[in-house]
Amino acid sequence: MAVAERLGARWPPSRFLFVVVVLLVLMADGALLRGEAMSVGINYGQIADNLPSPSRVSWLLRSMQVSKVKLYDADPHVLGAFADTGVEFVVGIGNENVSAMMDPSAARAWIQRHVQPFLPNTRITCITVGNEVFKGNDTALKANLLPAMESVYQALGALGLRGRVNVTTAHSLDIMGNSFPPSAGAFRGDVVPYMQPILGFLAMAGSPFLINCYPYFAYKADPGNVPLDYVLFRPNAGVTDASTRLTYDNMLYAQVDSVYAAIQALGHTDIDVKISETGWPSKGDPDEAGATPEYAGTYIGNLLQRIQMKQGTPMRPSVPIDVYVFALFNENMKPGPASERNYGLYYPDGTPVYNVGFRGYLPPMDDMEYSESTRKAVHLLALILILIASIALNLS
Image (cartoon, rainbow, N blue to C red; front, side):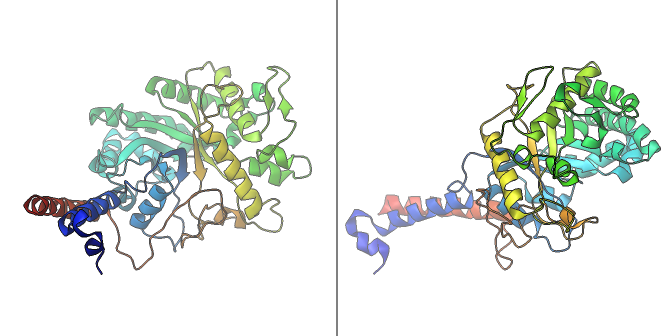
């Protein structure tokens, strides 16, 4: 017997159809599955030959309730797949293109091609010019970084996008000459001549200072002397900075505060520090201590708890830490040690590498690619069906 028939006169078929269609609309729009978005960001790297399509990844990230995504390029397929989702994007200009961006016409053309066509449907809020530029030995690239950032900033202004999209660059923690105790944080001597004007630019533009922090590297380099509990956010006695009397119960916060101290030493207290990358590998080579699913899950899980608590560092307790976790997927084509290919929260098939509470869903390969254009079409069809059902309801 049909459900509507079982309900009898108390719920005629036309009304039953109306309710069913309403539920379909809500499901098509994701309203039944959408909760409060998490404030954590995710790095979406794509150095792999086995990753799911961007439209399927869009489903995955939204089901995880992730609200911020960082790319290392400006992949149009990714940006298009996230149209009208509300997910906030950081897009990147690779190191190989930094020098070209010094030309104002090239910077403007890049924005017109890679950013402007996707606005406002896709929320692109930041452009990173280069990544970890000061980690290498390319002196020309280092010298060209700030002019390139300024050129991109000016191009945004010319296109009427300044204030909607900001400009910055991401740094490796290698820029630090000293990071302990945090209050004595200082940039490397060879970095200071470049960093001083970059900080001036960031302060003027209202842009954040992005730093890639990996306590794992410290543990890997000296596992016998770096307390595991301290790097994994597990209960421990902590470390007290003798100068400030501030106590740190984890290495990540100490690293961030050392960067704040280094920035302040160059005369700036008006720049926010954000963690553009942090993570822990679930697998490594035999000489890579600590690269296990257990430790990776502990690090990320405890970090997520801190983020949900809106916790700040001891030096900036009222400023919740802003973090982009590295990374969404294991990337099988990344060079280097095995750990480099095993930072993902997920395997490419959508299976979690370890459980930290995310409830993500990656649609099967043979399912319909549920793009935003498809969603809109389904939504429109459902609205038409609602109208028809409403008319039938009034006639019944």
